[in-house]
Image (cartoon, rainbow, N blue to C red; front, side, top):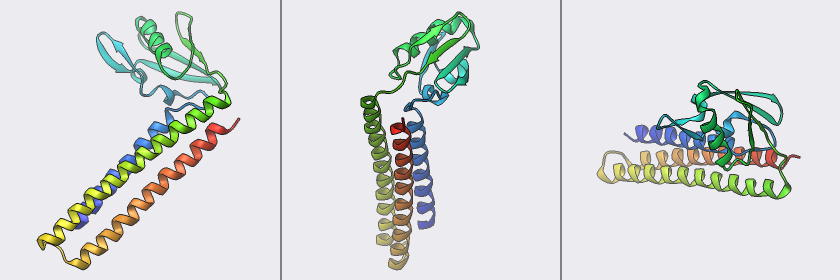
Length: 185
């Protein structure tokens, strides 16, 4: 029972780290990257549809992104969503594709993005700690109810703490890399 709790909490912590990675990838650096648009949805025939499902993405140059809609009638809707997004891109539509040239980031904007990344990293670490707390409560309950011995409970708690530290260290490493990428000129 304790082993299942540990395994389940480790899987949840892995998911929290994955969410942090995805969140970091949506924060733009000076380079064009299709993952910047992964969280955008377009109203496609009355249904909110992820932009990734409506168009193909190409990166012909480091700061240029071409978006080719599969359905040409959705071109205007896609352009509107891109213009209204917080990415700060100005899409240009030639009737067939949407071209986005990513502007250079100012030092001030880079610092703002670093703050956002740190906030997302802290959210991920809080999530990991909450998972740890719930697992520890479950382990304590097993010991209290007599389903597991005191030694087994202590051993499981040490394993849980090691898994928690490992996952928070992973988030810190991801944060360090993203911060360096953002501040790189």
